[in-house]
Image 1 (cartoon, rainbow, N blue to C red):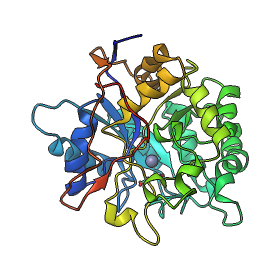
Image 2: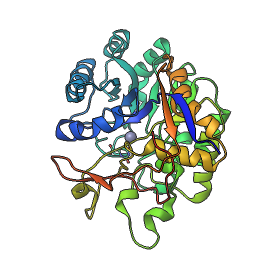
Image 3: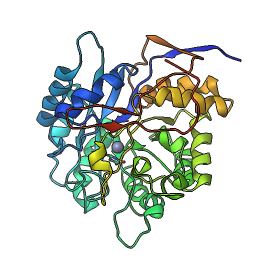
Image 4: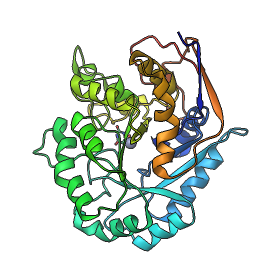
Length: 343
Ligand code: DOR
Ligand code: ZN
């Protein structure tokens, strides 16, 4: 039995850091373990322009505690008014590493997202030219489509047509939750990859709904049935370089989660790596953990891998059930299983 495991320092390829007091409270939990993270732009108002991203990056760096090292990889929020030249300049300056597509109304703070995909053709063309990845929140918002089918329908109705129209466009399907998405990535070419969250490797929809409703397991895309969770675990541990970690750690205060209409999001930044080590060990794939957390992501984003190493040791970690913030408590994702690995 392995007692320790040394891996390159991980990166998180999909993270919500928020702003203000919440940013200050959650950032140290990511910076403690991760070298870099792709920072989601769904603030209110959203991070739309290069100037918005530069200002948000400065606020993140100002919130980083002394002595911690962390590099935020900024993204722009795609709107129907996004200027292709602004996107290109933000990439050329090294500031921005991706553009995020939210179908309007798909999730938290997505009201400024895209309704008519024909209206972003110019931006997508430019992104294909300059090799800037598009990160997709892959769910249709058509109210007639069942929420458990929204990812699969997005692939057919939106993503596949976009990829056919822009074959050079590099796409990261974010936080995939279905075997349909796993299959689509496997069948795709080198321009297509996907992130997988920690929580979607652990929970299925019963965790949310059976025996009482559990708002802390509610996120978007919502967890699906068990066979989909198993497909995600197989993909994450397969060694296929086009699957990598994006935690989608999405903190909301308990007051905002525990409402008649509560917010979507699981807060996993503090315990993600301990949970992942457990999952990969359960799958007999600890040797694939480093690829998933530390190598496949930079490879797709054409960035260098981290040279620093971190050690996971077989020591049961302890995590609080929530963290305190100036805005109120934020509950940690509970994997409902004993954890044996500490970073
Ligand atoms: O569960 C989610 N929470 N999914 C998203 O797409 C957004 C995120 C958030 O910002 O809270
Ligand atoms: Zn997200």
